[in-house]
Length: 355
Image (cartoon, rainbow, N blue to C red; front, top):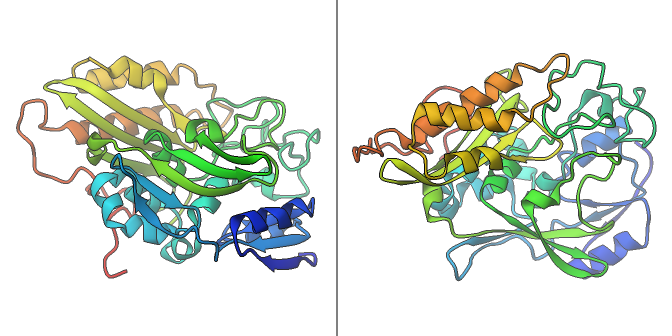
């Protein structure tokens, strides 16, 4: 790790001005991703601007019933927030599915959105990587690509976005508030992360030097019927092999509204709009869930080692929607909290107590 200078931000504008004055500067939140990348030699900032003491650490109710979440709110605090657990169980579950308890205590909401890919070839500076060094090539394309993208990738990059939280926020129509040199701006989360195209090194649509200040979630009353399901290689903390965030609203036996987000399949959290459209107005049956997901996954282009992600995502989605709607169409609610884990698909799916 090379020598760097450290500054502490006192307000968002001052922090952004510090970064604007140094081309090789970076914001420091929880540091759970950035410091690792600095140790590996992937990130080499000359200046770190600590933003953890900026006044961006609150979760506020909005007049419309939604929430505004400050960028420096810790992941563990957000997962335990009563309004999140009650109104957006999909978000609480996604947060608790990410990393370990120790990491969640450090990680921030803004940093989580901006964390970088866990692609092996990106983290190994001896390998060619267009994301790390534009024009260098992509070793992953013909390498060990089991964990990488099946949707939206380009010949320049097949990396995936690693966040669990962002998948849930994508399904919840969240909006990211950013402060940029030209002023404040709001970006729908579905447009915040970029697909790789020709410039995989440009990962977001935020202007260079921009600072995430908050995330807003609109009121979605039916989001109480929501959950997050993650498949991974081991029961302890690990990045997703595939994940699904789902929320659904029924009108009798019919699907009135639905939201679906997929993780670990693309360069950004993937909003499954084709599947959503295919389900609206249709009976909430397992067969229709499967047909809708297949319509979305018809876009998939698996690599040499990750074709398994197609049936994985299909089965995760169908199982999740069946669980969320079980008993509802016939008016015989099971009384079970749809956000409660029951299948042993992870060690941290149940909200923690005593924190």
